[in-house]
Length: 448
Ligand code: UQ1
Image 1 (cartoon, rainbow, N blue to C red):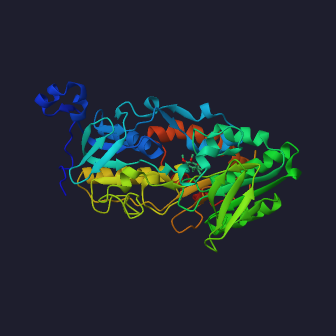
Image 2: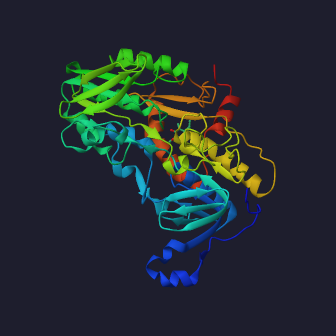
């Protein structure tokens, strides 16, 4: 592996290579632009911003480049609340330039190609960025187009097909709720790993509560069709959620995968995964779809960096790449088998930061990620079950009470406190997940 020496503190400077060539191709001279940095963070989402903040604050100005094409940074955990009309879309985003740390340099382009043997990434704007150390934080990509008829259904007016997962579609979810008076209201969960695996059912609970409040519940049949064989991966919370669904008369069908949408007839086609090939057609009056998702193509296409499934091949504990010691991953693009949530990225951030600093300083890696993730399972307009667990799918709870119970306090934490914590602490590199809080509260021995 062609690695630069750790500790080489080079500033991010612009170098134009082949000046004679660029002069003759003046209109396309950007194609040859070369940039260098000590740490390149690819992706300006939750993990990327948190890492850029921590690293640039430790390493100083102009040592970190963030490669991110988007103008806006979305706080995606708010999307379920937007779907339920509890928040507006404009409350969920800030300008990327205001969220990224001032000490880092932002290149507003996307990664086109990774070359970890040369320590280089090429960009959509024709640049080549050379790095000493690389943090991959590209997230996952939404693949609505994998389900025939779905994009057409989401984009045509009056189809009552919606999805909280994309900022492009989330605003329409509440409109769909408002327009639905009778018939089948169907919620789906796809047949692949996804981010925020609680969200497809959270929106079902919120919708059920909405219809009840509006006095329409008796005319509606609410169905949650999940491709998973279970309602939730952690038994303690699954037991609680089955009770919620039963109490609220939500029909939960497991092993049921959405394979096609026919908006002209308001029909959703599902496959029974327990009996492959067996299809069901269901007529809907409203359909909420969680799209299939994949690792980003740019990672999957780089065989040196990716696993078979296309995610970054890092060690589950250290989050360091298995082959390239100067490469780390954080968040949804990592191959680690944790639940993919903002809270997981928060808990990963001190691990990646400290282990990367150890590599830079030529020291041994000391930090290990335990797989912590949390999922505030909002069950309506005032209640929430706060699921927290680790790689072993054992609960790893912060608070000294039974978190499997629906609670108003946890709802307020999710709705009001978490956005503040995210923007004010996590985006500035000061939130490492609740591990310290958990330790303090466990010392108090308030727990049963
Ligand atoms: C968390 O750390 C986090 O990341 C910032 C979230 O995403 C917004 C969460 O929803 C939760 C619950 C946590 C965990 C924090 C506590 C205080 C339990």
